[in-house]
Image 1 (tube, rainbow, N blue to C red):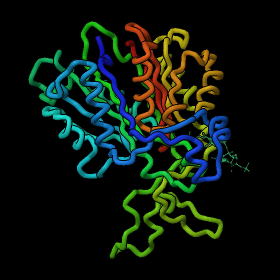
Image 2 (cartoon, rainbow, N blue to C red):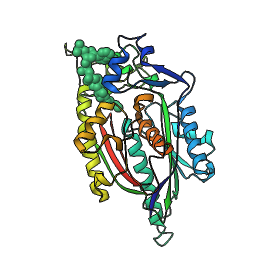
Image 3 (tube, rainbow, N blue to C red):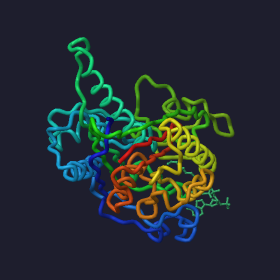
Image 4 (cartoon, protein in one colour):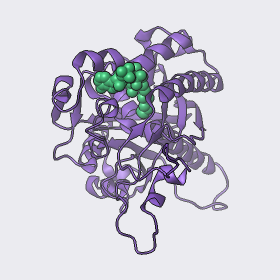
Length: 357
Ligand code: UT7
């Protein structure tokens, strides 16, 4: 018995932006982007909101599983680009999809969001199922039997479109899965989540609100996440507000490859399986080179990795769920297969999860 993946879906904005399109706005080339990242194109929202994308992916998962919105007890939305801070993105989705009975909340674990979201949902579902075996009503609580877990991002809102080092990487999109308690299937076998302090802010983005004129704030710089972390420029001044994604690419690359290897190995160990037992590995899609490097380090043939980045770029919290949907839709994942999800991202966050399909 366990918590099983029973539905999946994804959504992409209509507009496709190629590397050649980007070469029109920053100094770059299709050749450089493909060689360094494996990305050929990405989808960018023109009119689609995060809620539009999330609802399309969520509805696709519901349709695929054949479930009514009413039957969902829990909705977790992982995002760093909600349409609003309040109401939470999950509340907007809940209302639009008509998830009448769901408890809904957002989760921000940056690009590791999918792993964190599935782990939280499956932990709640398992706890609910186990608490039903305890004589009631010693601990009366909400019951979670079926969860919709959605990763949705409109990263184009927080990309600095003048910075060629970052704007070529990101795309918009959403992915979703439905998880439910199954007394006959093992479902999620293990998980491993980790947070690593990031005092140098190798990946950061200030709030999108910006430093508005605040009557009680003396220095605008105090509002910067970099200032909060005590980071200064060469002149010693606290680094100012920067409402766009900024990252130290090479430092992140190193973190990413080490994090994937660590998380994959620990999650497999905890599940009592070897990497050879895993039919499909679905990694965060940040850079194809990172995936290739990790495959080599883990000693796993690249063919066992789902690689979707070429068509969509890095979609942060949506990335693993969109790639997982690709793997299901192309029948790469068959009933009974063991699947490994692995991610890393800002925070810094990382993690992995093994489940039986
Ligand atoms: O999900 C969030 C986590 N993010 C990541 O995991 C990102 C991890 N990092 C990476 O994927 C890679 O570091 C990048 C793809 C971001 C960059 O690749 P790189 O091989 O590390 O390039 P680099 O930063 O060392 O830059 C090499 C050169 C530089 O020129 P010089 O100094 O050698 O003359 C850059 O200015 O490439 C230049 N460059 C570009 N050239 C053409 C940087 N961006 C571009 C560009 N087009 N778009």
